[in-house]
Structure formats: C-alpha cells, structure tokens
Amino acid sequence: MTIEARARVALTGTPVDNDLTELWAILDWTAPGHLLGRLGSFRARYAQPVEGGRDPAAARRLARLVGPFLLRRRKSDPGIAPELPPKTETDPTRWR
Image 1 (cartoon, helix red, strand yellow):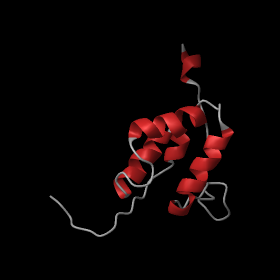
Image 2 (cartoon, helix red, strand yellow):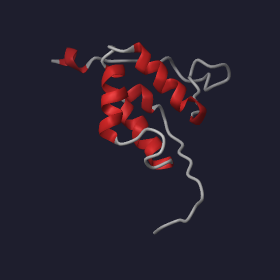
Image 3 (cartoon, helix red, strand yellow):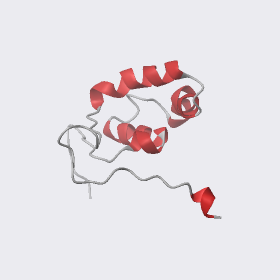
Image 4 (cartoon, helix red, strand yellow):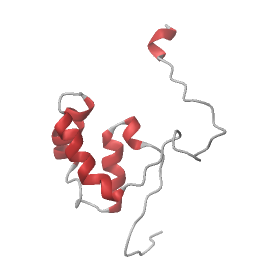
C-alpha cells in the first residue's frame, strides 16, 4: 500500500544514543538523499569519526546540520516521565 504525501515525519526513540546510522536511516526516509547524503559518505564523514571519538568537530558539524530537524527531549528534562526510574546500563561482557 502506498500513501501519497507531500511531507514525511518520523517519531522515534533515541537513535543518536544507539548509533548514527540509525539517525541517517530516519532522516534519509524523511528527506531521501537530501540532508545527509548516501550512507557510505555519511559513515565516512560523520559516523566513524564521531562514534570513534576521534573528531569532536565532526560531532559539532553533524549537530548543526540535523539540529533544525530534531525535537529531542531527555528523561532528565523537567516534566518528562518523572515516574520512570533512572536509566540502568548493564555490560553483557561481564556476564561470562
């Protein structure tokens, strides 16, 4: 089934907290090929330098580029799900 639309909007969780290719996939779906380019060039220009912690300037450039298209709220923001417990992180490599 195809739904014709002049614009696309994506509502999602926290792709930036997972990995940057998820951010690319969501924004590429909303504006195919326009904002972040092809996946391979996005990985080379942003994902690898940012995720590897090698290039803080790349992280700033990416944030400036996508910032106008994102509405991001954090659990720590006032009034956002105050009943939720704090985030718990577990290292699965320690289970062995």
